[in-house]
Image (cartoon, rainbow, N blue to C red; front, side, top):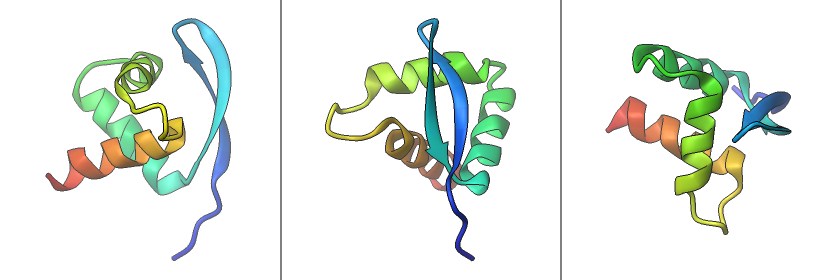
Length: 71
């Protein structure tokens, strides 16, 4: 089932920005943050700091979710 990405407002190191992410990834991402007792913005900041600069933030979040759910 194809889902269109939705714009989401987030904070990265205290700076407001937006990213486009499908609902399925966003819901799983929120579940992972809750399970690990970390805020969504702190987890996004961690992913942003760890990602390769050639990868978009949304792409890095998708990869993070896939890794956490399936590996």
